[in-house]
Length: 403
Image 1 (spheres, rainbow, N blue to C red):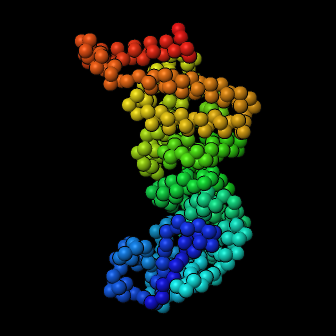
Image 2 (cartoon, helix red, strand yellow; image 1 turned 180 degrees about the vertical axis):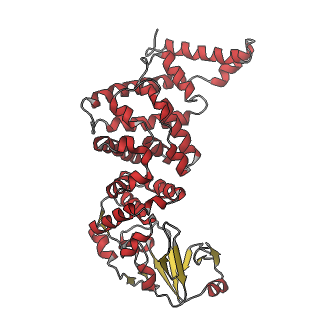
Image 3 (cartoon, rainbow, N blue to C red; image 1 turned 135 degrees about the vertical axis):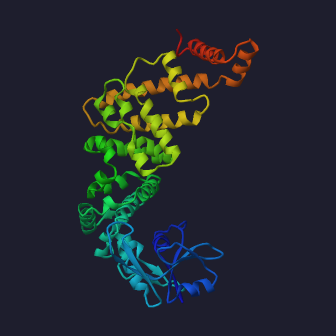
């Protein structure tokens, strides 16, 4: 039995990164020998085991053969006869196809170290095209290492996979998994740029064509997304930003209520987490507060704060505002349509008005107001109406909203 450190841990060590999970390949062993050594088996498709103390993954060296379309269309062979080089041959990119022996010797049969130094994503072999997940992984690595470039031959393979329908066979759960990881990377826009470049974006995220088909608008969306990443925004905030009715923003106006027909079926199809779905719904359904409607005076601001449930869930309001601050600030650098920058400046003022209203009203103690209403003999719906009036009067008393 020979054990080698492989994959991302080797790659990241060469890059000076130290926080990677460690994966190991075991050469010359069998499942029974692994069990006898105290390893715990996991996975049913191929023999992978967990170390009893470190809980790191140890996989038997294996080869794979494509037998059907899609991510699961593979047959695996794991036996003591499979060599380390054969195991490395089945991996996706050269930078992920390196191993390290127990005495620290680098095993690099495909030039991964040279590609790291050249900052190039290059496939190991033509077998790359057999697994559509590799298109997603390539795009995710581009988001993590934004200075790396995709090799032209690798890009051509990705384009061929899209044309062959391989990408269409990806299961929604895996698409979401890779997308979520990419969104939390240093430059998430690169994930979508790589997918767009090879044609996979239109297949995987067809619901976003309203903004992706316009290069200026797409550049603006990506700039907004990277801006949120620099602010260390949450996954839900980054996902919600992508769900914005961008073409309404770009158009400058829309018929009343049109935004409400933009509920993203994408998040339902990908089964995104509930917090991502919730914030996306809020962003979409209340985006018209910035797009259209009457001027924002005290009553309109209070109505918005109540609709977004700010008094019970202030974190939801803060997330909504962070999304649109990112959107509007990006407009200062990207003007996808003539005169659009001026339009966004006007909407920025509307956003500041909402922020001012919240700053004023957040100082009121809702619990104390409720107790005061009950003490005065009010009951049921009367309590809510009285609190609403108190909040409105508090706004009118401020310099910003004086009647």
